Amino acid sequence: MVPILFGRALQNPYHGFTVYTVQSGDTLSSIAQQFYGDPERFRTIFQANRNVLEDPDEMFPGQELRVPQ
Image (cartoon, rainbow, N blue to C red; front, side):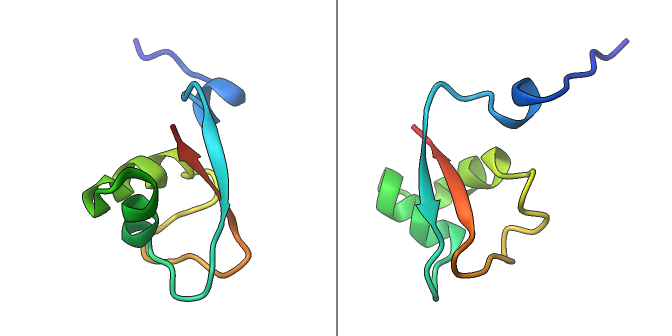
């Protein structure tokens, strides 16, 4: 049996996050480099934003993303 989670538990399993507004030319890798010093950690940002991102390569300027701390 698999438990089903709803609401905040599903969308925000982190203890804290920063809201980042996507700029023209940004990628999840460049945002990960800026916040974590490691572009490979883009998956962390992608997972935290599955409610607004379907594809890690598709973001648009002005979109607000949560960056887990």
